[in-house]
Length: 84
Image (cartoon, rainbow, N blue to C red; front, side, top):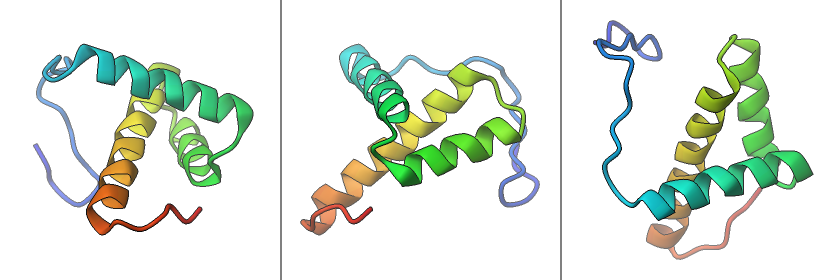
């Protein structure tokens, strides 16, 4: 249920396991490595913001993986290199 922008409250606490298991795992590991090395500053800032909101580690890493996937999709659609 969505009451206002950014105020989503889930009716179920489970996430769907649809799609490629390998892709999900690759994104998860890519985010963990990226955060550990600090190579993507946008992703690190997003991670820090979510952690300050009190989100658990795995929830935040999944959110970052989703954000990374959106970045990759935008790069492919626009055909332009990524600008950090």
